[in-house]
Length: 321
Image (cartoon, rainbow, N blue to C red; front, side, top):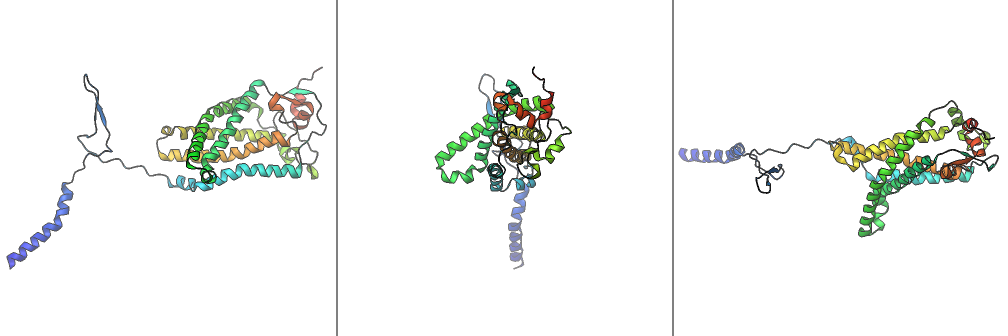
């Protein structure tokens, strides 16, 4: 009986110790994730060998910054923010014009023109402007299209549409970079702060047609304070837009996923700011400021427009005899 108990005890202990013995003898084996080596063979095509002699476990993936992921989520929040900020600004400014009216020339058009922009200025402005508008439209399609457009489009049409949007977006990045670079370098010296800028803000640019603001035309040089604000916003956030966009187009430029996520955040924030400011810029030039659009179409402006909106600059122009 004692021998029987001894045998049963030994067998039981052996059974429970089998996993421990197995774990001690297990060795890491070569797997598909291991790098494939290309071995040159004299007089023949190279051999590809993917089973190294010293098997290794894969390096653990770096931990992703949760703060970046939380900032990017949910995607619907960013889609709504960019969509409503862009189209909402159109609505706000349309309401402003409806209530306030346009900023008309007090003395009307004189019929005499003065030079304001060169042909090169106009060329690169429109290169950057057209590219910027196409980037905004295609960017909105990429970020918000799957929520606003895809449900109402067939799968085939949506795939074609979003594919075209991505291609146009990537293509338009290059003329935008060119226009941005030329405009920032060429115009920066005309956008420096002046003593009259504070007065321009106090008078709200002279664009209001009611109360104590009506009829006020604050002093301004070549660029007024509002134009300077737009220019430096365009310079700063345009640089962020370009830098982050290049990373998103060529993700191998950053070493980690965190770098790409940060680039996406900066790209979205820049798109939000530039999109809203672009609408203001368009409205000011085409609707609110009478005679303003002519400047970037012909390079010339009416004398009365120059006197009313940029009097300090006009006073320095050589007077024709």
